[in-house]
Length: 238
Length: 318
Image (cartoon, chains in turn brown, cyan):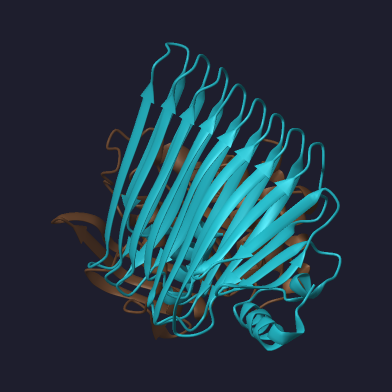
């Protein structure tokens, strides 16, 4: 479904992504595990085309087509979406309207269900604006609900667990599993090993490059043995 | 009561209101208190118990005396409909409002100028809100796409002890033309004033907003809020002024102007002042472009860029 080949990005002459190769298969939850500053959010932006990021080298192939030059809307219309680490707040836009516009190619009558899937009571939230009156955790869960409503082919979830309390986290993870069951592939970007437990495969990102990929348990062990003890933070020696 | 001699005029106003997205059933309902004025002609004036609307037609408009009797609480909103259907003309509304003590009313004003090429619409209001009275006033304008209109709403509002004045002025349908909004409120002890202006300037629209609140009584509270979006060559200057002139007065000025494109110009001038050490008045003014992250969030759900900007603008002006 998604094939990233030798992806490169330089910002102000500084290499941020360095020949990154990645593959996300149909129906797969693929975790990207990495410490702060390794380029996790940059990958999300490059695949979605947001933040004006365009690769300085390499290709991003989605369903057989190079999408590197497409706009954000064009990529979304092909079935890719992104849930931001810190989702934007929009004054005057209600949760109901946000979920409706997200689900315009899906089932608008089921939007309440998507809120319930992330542990939010529709009656309490539907008519609220997605503005600064929501807590960070509430806004994150609404973001997840809007991705669920969209039924994307590929959902890029950037740090979906950040700002989420321990009660809501299992609900959120269940929401991701349900999204995957309904046919969406997921690129799950995180710094938390706990979150990668729901992935089918996990890749470790360091200094803008994938340095290892495999099953979650195997990668978790490898990460502990190699990354946690590594003196070269964000400077891979592999 | 509709005068039959002006029935067609009345129908024209109602139709124009509906075309602009309004719900014409509220203006047709016999149970709704309303006043409908076209140019200088009163087409309908239906009062309700405890509410008296006296009118006098003048050469260029109408004088209106709007009185809510002491203790009267009106459940359903009262509708005012002012407008001018021809391309040219002048409409001057001179309004005197007396909301007597302990009264409560919500007034919805619709100002309809769908064909204006050279039109002036002026309102000069003298408003008195009694002790513990509550008055909610919402004015929405429906303009055409010519922009040949000058709108000059001016009001002086006095709010008595424990009284509440809330007003929202919205102009986001059609071109603004030239707007010179000037509302000034004087609040006595524990009175509350909220002024909100929302406008979408396009083409060569020219917008001037002055919201001024005097917190003259102990514990009075006020907020002057404005939300403007400007595109093309539109210009706007917003002045939000709040004066904390009494102990424990609380005020806030909140101005946000978004500029879409490179030729629109936005200016914000907040003025806050306190003369008591226990009074507090704050302000925030922000001028900027439409937030790129907001646009991209909506684009990532499949909206085109223009659609995303439209959703954001509508939200701000809602």
